[in-house]
Length: 118
Length: 402
Image (cartoon, rainbow over all chains, first blue to last red; front, top):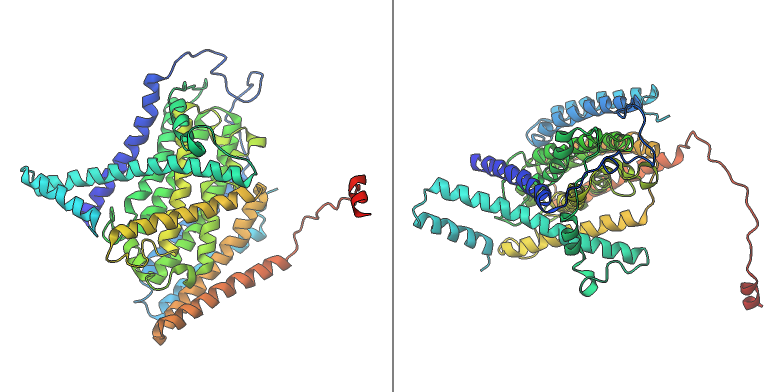
């Protein structure tokens, strides 16, 4: 098992190294003639005004909050799914209740209008 | 001959031992060689896929597609590579340089790293870890980070808007994707990929759990970020989305990562729902298993391309509603039904085909009932009814009739 994780470590290193090589190789061959006009932000013809990192819709934040809840839930469900065969039926029902509680949360968020894109 | 890959591996191992290398060193060198081989394979696959995709897109849209460079334009991808290697890098003023340069590398690495755990044939597995599914889910999420980094560091409003939109979409669709992945795990009672393939030897999980397979396909299409879910680069609204400011090979990395991601999703569907490398004679001939694996993956890839080339883009509110108000509730319902049914049917100790039949019926039942409920609930927003206009009839068609 340990050698498998060693392989994954090596693989991660190779998977990062290849794109780095691919990205840095053209830096040697390609021309480099920077100019002020060329390096302007590509938005439209005229110069960009004001701060670019603008405030955006708070809806994105609410979505990510709800996502966090459900993502953690699914992580908890993986061990449950793996040991389903060894669990008594009662423990299976407990898992179902756990899902039902979070499902109620989803319906609550829906009723509150948190998932409405307006 | 049957076990070609393992024969070569053992030969190299013994060769290094005979040269006086220790067993640890020989194993380490083999692992390095193996991972480099898989990564190069990924790049070669992408070069072929770009040509296939462009040719297919051309044919579906009633064009020829690439047809100048070489027979049927097969050298088009190579010409593009040479061109993109000689392009200048332009970094916009005010960009966050380090984040700007890390983002394309991370986008590519997050897709490549998933390939570490793929089983290509019966004994040809990179790392057969016991948490393979969790590894895929964890590594796959890094792509979202790359998109946000690219959008934020570009110092461009369109890029930032595209990035925040796509992050909202990608994290939303990750939930039904992970829940659909739970179902093969639940049916196998293991997160090991080789065990999942072993468990679907006679009956693929496509037949045991069709709803999960469908939901996994839809949500991973959203994860790829291609049409009908290509909001992240809605050309008419956002120039090119998060990679507006990228040029040369840095853009190329995003482009290659997108294609490789689509192929990787094909491989994931193959592993979880189409039996992976399994097929006739594959257990005794691992080389056949490799062929089956890549053929199935390629077929799934073509299906995804076909879907994306046929459907128009959907609006962001419709797309998020589809996820939060349909796919997440239904996939949770499906999970509960499959879990309870699997547990009860296991206690009953029925024949395998009865078990598969009941599971198929329950899964399809969940899908059809929820589709019926969703179809009956009317949308709150009234659609604008355009007045009907008289249709013009050309005089030529009138003459031909009479």
